[in-house]
Image (cartoon, rainbow, N blue to C red; front, side, top):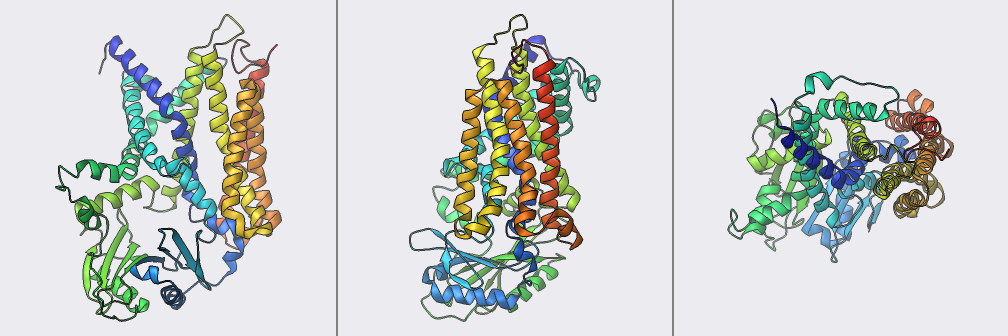
Length: 521
């Protein structure tokens, strides 16, 4: 397929500017997104004493449920709870109080807390991934960024399609660093294009789903969106409380009923993960049990029961879901890699890091393409873009690693302030790195922040081992692979950052002197 030179120039301009506009947000989303692969491992790493706790049982979950309902009337209207299992060894209950603030409780801690136990670090990384750490508006901003991301991908495909066969595997290292970065950018972008298109589509869908529904409200829902949302998003039907007293929730029976219903509908390996309970203690109480099954792209499914009789009210299980539930389940599973085995998780981790590299290298290529080759002094736009790229991108790496180190320290010295403390450490460190990059020459800032990232990331497994006693070798020896992999990945990334820092130092010293990345001769 051939395109005119004018068409290619138009798409090149579109690709460049869309990439620059969305690139910083996408770097944050992809780097943090790569770490969300360990979302269920990070809480154990943060509080490694929990690995020695005996696994909770359904009886423990029943005790937690009864304790919360007895102490918190607001939880009786609507509450949720995780089942003890692989992803959540200990059950956690959650509900909204009279002020609309989410409260959490766990075994022997029934009073309610605004932060769930052991999850602050994992939630921080997840929030950076889908909201950039911005409250309320962040998720909608990331939805818009996902749309721009799709435009950048399609325009990049048009640019490289005519010479795809010749350049796909061309990786030409040497003195022409721009050519090398261009080759690496193209190879990673083209080979991972199907995955990146999937990330763009599912990211926009998940972030903008409520905005899409609001826009379609007058056209499709006839102005009755609020009545349509429960049926589209939940499995249990909405039933008003009758005012008549009902029976207590028997988790063991309902858990067994959910397994039986799944088997009857041809779903094998269904494992309940969490529940949603409405109108507890009332004759119209309903419970929705959500779990995952094997051998399906969208593994999440749910069944809903009448609490009093145990009668099946509705089901949304794989193979028998309506279009709404099937689409949302598949979109979530595709976006976060919640399907398949461990190979899929590691593939998503590498794709996340590769995506972060795409947007970082895209900024470097923009700077290099506008370099003034015959004069030492470079343009203000190139210098400022270099400073912003280093401060935002490398600064984020430093900030996340600093939050991991802070989590280990605060767990020992101030366990009640861990969640707030790691957020302060993360965002203050990120801001300090951005300010440092703004005040230094780009070559200096890049070298210094890359070394800082390598050192702070290396401190992650060191702080964990020194403060908890679980060094990576002892974690592996005792079979605590969640602890081992977090430490091992941090150590590998520290080595990689040190290699990049050394290369950046050599480039500044020995490379082309007329560049924002060169030290003054």
